[in-house]
Image 1: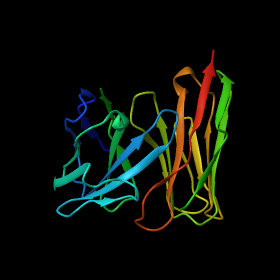
Image 2: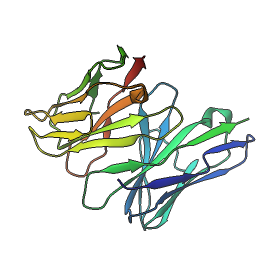
Image 3: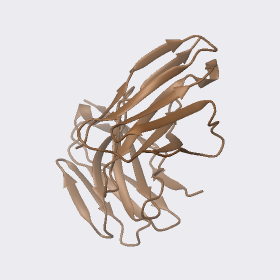
Image 4: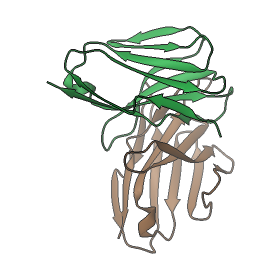
Length: 115
Length: 111
């Protein structure tokens, strides 16, 4: 299957700082990537759809000014959590859709802890 | 929004036993995907289904796209300890819409 990488795998930051998470499709070009958030023992919650060369589409209730998404190339999307607070602590996972298919491949996730 | 009902929520089985889980929806889905997630990792795609009635295998895993297009099941035969994890069903309710996820089935395999 296709490979998606995510960096960093873990990050600890202080309240008020910003954190950037990178998502890369390693062996295919992805015009569409997705960002999810997952709470313990729960399913994945879609935060936003990232489209290469255009603005991201955010799900209802997700603050676009807090979770900045940039999809500047066909292999890279970034999620920046701005002015992080402890309640932003979570497991963030990206995925990328293989073009002309319905298959979505996920990155390994980023564990964010805000102290 | 769309709801996928995945059951069972958890399963405790002995090594060597078969496992079966399913997902149902109140509306038609165009694709069904099954993922496995290990603790602290992202989900890994196991099987993708595209046509009603389609039956697809991947090693000891078998999944089917229901005839009504409103359900799918995943079977794991002869379970082994590394089958432990959370299995998620997912599907697209329309051609290029957002992927909807089930709540997951936690599988625990005891030796």
